[in-house]
Image 1: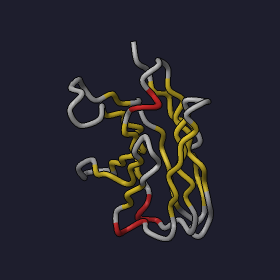
Image 2: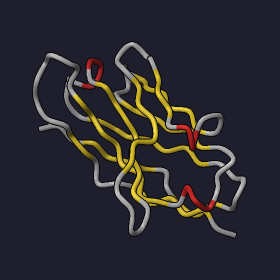
Image 3: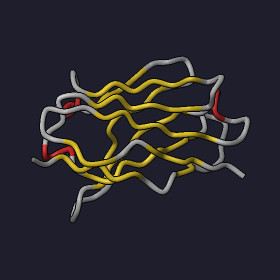
Image 4: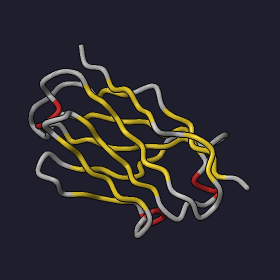
Length: 119
């Protein structure tokens, strides 16, 4: 059974920083593509950043230069360092695990952690 548990969300002022963590169970972590998604009130869930097993990262334009995704395969933990936060970053942030291309299988999701950016 694969489980993903996010932590690190909270209330922060504009311009502030937060670091999200996603702790994963199971031996799959090191080979899966890991990602952070977010869903703001009334909006669809969207990709924020993704990192391959080899450490290649992809960030959406709205967070480039502000957010950094990283992973620790030994600790089975995914991170999202969020700097220069803006009110529009307010959302529930979800951790995602996706099998590599050609492997087959399903995506896994955490339950999310709420990030609120407000003064």
